[in-house]
Length: 65
Image (cartoon, rainbow, N blue to C red; front, side, top):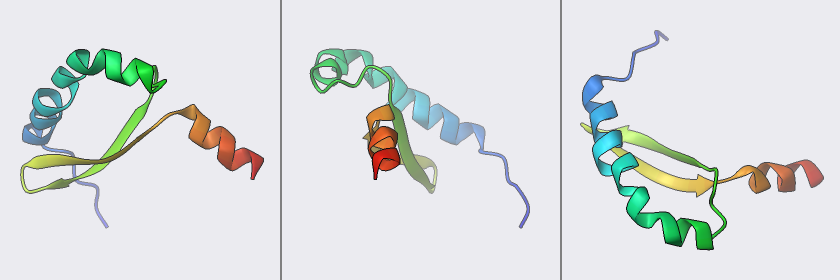
């Protein structure tokens, strides 16, 4: 399988529809203890579709198990 670089239109979608919206969600994110977090997802067509958000506590829980 050959690596295919993520196209610029996907990065633009991530910036416009995800990153730019985060500041307006600051209060909600902080109340849920999301200060540093990861958003995972996939691309479909020309859009990035997020699946989930998680922070380091997820990995700490897995380590304990």
